[in-house]
Amino acid sequence: MLARAKLRVAGALESSALRGDGILSLAGALLAAVTLASLALNAGLGWWWSDAAAALLIAAFLLREGWRMVRGTNRHDA
Image (cartoon, rainbow, N blue to C red; front, side, top):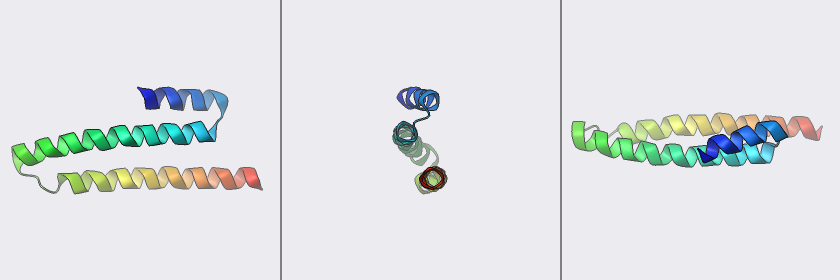
């Protein structure tokens, strides 16, 4: 809920700093949820690799967001 509120306010204010903070809050929530789900999958189904697979998906999401932030910063500096 915190991440969604930050992203909503960042959009209204057009604040890239607040958007970045919202993305970090979202990433923290996703990491916590993935860890919990991975523990459940490992205990219930023996899927020891589920944590690594989910971490790779989250890393790809954060890389995309980081690239978006860098490109947006460069456009404003020029």
